[in-house]
Length: 409
Image (cartoon, rainbow, N blue to C red; front, side, top):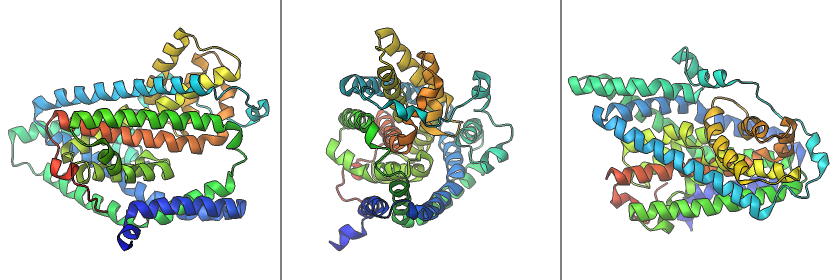
């Protein structure tokens, strides 16, 4: 019993339940507790951009020059494939559950967040004009874009001069940052408790209930997609799928409760190495790149939301519309990673393409936090599973770690 209580996964799950219960019990007056959760998120975020940047540099720097193109191509193909499949799951769930039928018209009076960025702005947003500015602003995408050529050049330099000293320095800095993250994670149950208490107290069930069918459709699609993804990856990596699922519980709970892929990333990278047996270089490369190239959750959400809005306006989704939704949902995942605002901002790209008024995204504004829970779990778990698949293809899995039943926390 004592061992279970000390297990961090159990502590986080308990904090989730207790936070929701206390928030519903006290209501709006509990709002000030949010500052505790915000402090926890900031403590994680203060190191995560530097860690991601360093991890990509370290991973690419350790590769042989001829391996970079082969490995990069494999990662890109996998990311694209699973993102497209996620969009189809979203459409299928919407067609099965019909979440857009029977919604109260009054809900559309909510305010919606919109994005005015052009295609040119979107493309330019990927590239930093000043790496120090990007790091100081916590711009994950621009930091990774900077880290990729630095890592490639380090790989070339290392092949000509094995004694170069920059890469070992980057590795040492990364070890320190990982230690900082692990230390901060000890207070994760407290931060998650505060965040969930704030959400339950200030949002409550009144906003959720009218769109419960949408959340149900998202939950069902997410669960079935992850089951299929886990089973296929487990078969390819030759591991028990139930064991694989069990080893991903901690990162899934952190993703679900924080709704932040960036905050979850350090835990995700650590679990990939120390629970899934993925090599350090594969984990350090695949997981950070997944934040740009692999948005399973967002792709599924956008496709599900598009069909839901079509149903709301009494319109049918033809085969042509479905194809258009899949393509734009996949591309919008890339287009909005540099824009703050989450799924609602991404919808401003998708909604006009299917011929609906931009104001219609307000329909889903009230439950965006809860939608974000499913989106983040899919994004995080999807990246981890792709990392495991890539590691299996490269024969870089430590099966003594992957197959052990005892998890250390």
